[in-house]
Image (cartoon, rainbow, N blue to C red; front, side, top):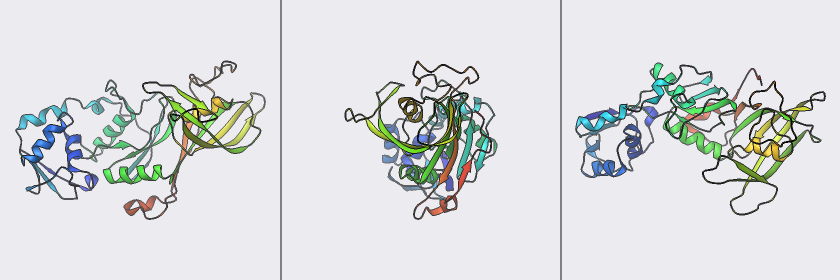
Length: 312
């Protein structure tokens, strides 16, 4: 038998999802059968899988101990590097500065050293998180492997739910800075286009018009910070309106201003600058422009989190 007491970090999550995260090797059919046969109860009462957990609930799992062992066989986060640049932190939210060439999460479970694994290790060492007992910290958005800068990580389920909705509602603004080839005739402008990414492809296409139903609208606002005439390089600030895979990189290349150091989305006529070994794109600022009540996250309203030093 296993007994688990629910704390504030796990409030609001459905119990079946909580159990699934706790024991990822358990099949859904096995979990639902355990509920049906009263092998899983809350506060010693029969509970449906759709029940939403609240603080101080106690989960009782009446199963043989051997069912719990496999959960510890895949703790890749324990082998991540103990290196993480924390820019902002409170009891609900962690904002870190991701270095270039670090994968945020490994979909194929082949890499131990990812950003999310570093965050798990960091919180584990602070005694704020333990696998099998607490909600697993999760990324609220992602950055390309070769893009560095700010990324948000939710420490609990309610924070993940609320801030994910805020991002969807455009109540959290994300800003980037980059170096690009060429001079802009207009110093500030919203630019729109249509974006397409085929399944199982790591390359996106940009078009001026909607070619078919698979092409989705994208938008961003660029502002020219400075222009170096001798090098023909523009320093831009980008505010994302939509956030699609490779959007900034592909869209700027489509506009004729590829990012310096870019390897994938760059037209052949642009010569590489040896000084820059990776793409000059940094996520520099996050602004919380909440509308309406944001419950326990109201303290983040109008907050700005930014990098103090920007080095390409």
